[in-house]
Amino acid sequence: MAAPGAASAAASPAPVPPPRARILAVARELFYHRGIHGIGVDAIADAAGTNKMTLYRHFASKDELVAACLRQLAAEIDAEWDAIAAAHPGDPNGELTAWLQHIGQWFIRESGRGCALANAAVELPDQDHPARQVIREHKSSVRERLARLCRDAGLRDPEAVASQVFLLCEGARVAAQGLGSDEPLARLPALFKDLVEEHTPPGAASRGKRHHRSRRI
Amino acid sequence: MAAPGAASAAASPAPVPPPRARILAVARELFYHRGIHGIGVDAIADAAGTNKMTLYRHFASKDELVAACLRQLAAEIDAEWDAIAAAHPGDPNGELTAWLQHIGQWFIRESGRGCALANAAVELPDQDHPARQVIREHKSSVRERLARLCRDAGLRDPEAVASQVFLLCEGARVAAQGLGSDEPLARLPALFKDLVEEHTPPGAASRGKRHHRSRRI
DNA sequence: TTAAGGTGTGACTGGTCAGTAACATAGTCG
DNA sequence: CGACTATGTTACTGACCAGTCACACCTTAA
Image 1: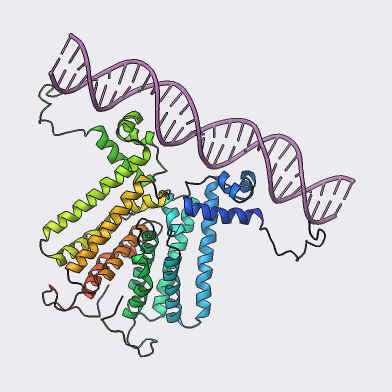
Image 2 (image 1 turned 135 degrees about the vertical axis):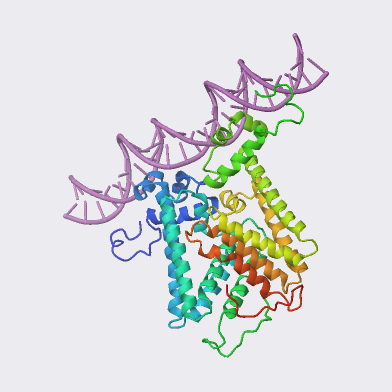
């Protein structure tokens, strides 16, 4: 209606994203909060302000839509980590603690329904489901990146630290639901901090701050 | 067929459990391995060697069946813990380590689809679902029991240990799926052992075995 | 103006599933 | 024997849902 002719090149600030993006965004929300089996494609299309037919023109099936949602989420998580890494060039120790801080804060903020990737794995037992490959790839990539970071940070027994952090994260994700209390979640950042200090050799990139056995968690 | 008359009082060693028990057992299996939404009541009744009508005579609805399955599982877990406690009377430290060992071994054995209670929480987002109450009660009871045990065992900062163990367990449960590798799981028992030693004050119920900072995980 | 491509609309199919009704059967107890 | 109770059988309803078809619309580009 406004500017009918010149709205083609690079003028409008995109007030309405194209249908595909809207569908993806809405589907992620609904899958996450109501469960993959708890929402139908019709309701998704409706909530996205479009219709089922357009949805099926962009996604071959509901299963493919689920996989696309998880792919987008995984890409966002990777991007966040990249940003953190870019903020700490040549400082694996700083990157590690920043990332742990980031994750810990995330849980406190978002303690609602855990990790969408882990939830999807529960809801889709079939290992051949297109979403399962996305989940497997992302989880192992995170774990590998974490282990490498621990190694580069010069931690003692980096594999053990990575395993423990990984399990704590997964636990926090699932503990967020099921258990009502936020108490274990709230301890996460301190837990991470302690874990790293615990495995930091006395002279590794530290500012002379020795770690001692009696610490508060 | 054999002993037609005298098979009434207390003779037969119960070669076939009553329908309700069969339904419950089969439902637990199928809900666990194929997901709550992935199996229908008809298939459950069929696999239990009975039919849908009998199922509905014993359980008001599918939702109630789910809740009954989880209640039974929770009771079994409590009973296992009770047995461990009974084997270590007046020795909270022994009970704690025995339980941690028990859990750690469980994960290594059963690393398939995680914890049925946690999975159900993911599959049933509605907090008013009858199964959710079972889940909430059991999880908080486990956490409380664990915290009390850590306190009785004289550990330093028992709440922190309980939180960490709890999160590690939850993490292990969910990490079993999604991630293909068993590596973090395999570390669990050692992780627990270390965690307890780490928080054991020098003179608490120990046989003079001092814990030192450099340990392998 | 015309052609084309992405989009909206409604109806429809085929299938699954939870839950119910009506009736038949078998074992149990008086 | 007769009554009762638990179970088996079949068929059915009503709802939901994934996926498709045919057709109308509307914007953009040639």
